[in-house]
Amino acid sequence: MLIESLVKSTVELQGFRVTTVNYDGDQLEAKLAPDRRYLPCCGQCDRPAAYRDTRRPRRFRHVPLWGIPVDLCYSPRRVNCEHCGGIHVESLPWVSGKRRFTRALMVTLATWARVLTWKQVAVLFRCSWGTVAAAVDEAVSHGLAHRDLSGVTHIGIDEISRKRGHVYVTNVYDLNTQVLLWSGEGRGLQTLEAFFNFLGEERSARLQGVCCDMWQPYIDIIQTRAPQAVLVFDKFHIVQHLTQAVDQVRRDEIRDKGAEHKALMAKTRYIWLKNPWNLTDGQRVRLSELETLNLKINRAYLLKEAFREFWDHGPAAFAKLYLDRWFWWATHSRLKPLRDFAWMLRRHQEGLLNYFRMPIDNGIVEGLNNKAKVISHKAYGFRTAKCFIQNLYHCMADLPLPRTMHTFV
Image (tube, rainbow, N blue to C red):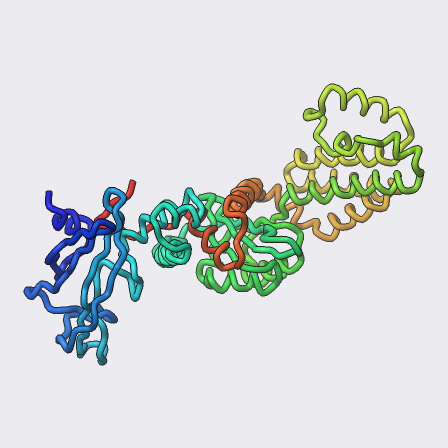
């Protein structure tokens, strides 16, 4: 098979033809020319238009052949379009806009960028990091424009830290398909407002359930933009708040009782925080010894374990009875962190009980957030939020890639 035939089979050349292919020892250069049987098409409306003049030659990077770089060389024409009114460069079917690489190379780079870092892909294909970033950006733009969001009914909202200094990115996931729906910089009221602007009023009205933590800006926006959706507070975040309260009791007790008690409580932090079935044999023995002492942390531990039963007290009416009983225990425990936690639950009681009306949680979200952190750590971080968010979309949103004649499996 001739090299010209290989180029024709991997490049969209409707209305164009390959004239020559030259090899100078470093790369292949395929020269393209117009096929006179076809009229040039306008680059704006993609309709046939009248020829005006020819511009200087342009080079386009194509998918390497046997490790040899391939460039396409073509002199684009300008047309006088009567449909959209104006003089425009003709439509080139193998490239998007003013990119200097073909759509086939874009898909290839974007596919590799889902499994490797952008720097590694750039080294592999002998191109710049910016070329890979541009390919991912084009792939994400195409995917966002062609994905279907009509089936989104249950979403989970959470934030992850992008870098040191409380710099956050808010992610919204589809709990049914377990893919990323939207990602935005920050974690405030304006951030989630931007998500609902992106989703639109019609799709927002189809939401049935929203799961998030007890962050007030999230609550305010959800109740305003999707009032029909059942707002469920994530039980994993609630348990996290509880374990933090228990650990604060341990810290306060060590501070109040001095160095001798600190030596007694050495290396016991995770004994109080872990689930009983996850304790090692040595930790079980140590816990049994500590339970014989009159410790505040032991009372906090018993309250923590008693709260575990709350999740088994469905439906909502029975769960509320148990929550009221546990609230009394916590507020009369003389443990300030547990009292504060109990009052926090009382303030958000309705969203807490909604779990028994719509049993959704952010367990899927936590797993996807871990994947997002792996993406960031694999690349040793991203300098800008835009690049980080684009990579999250590319790797976690299950976006469709453009179809090309050059298939990459």
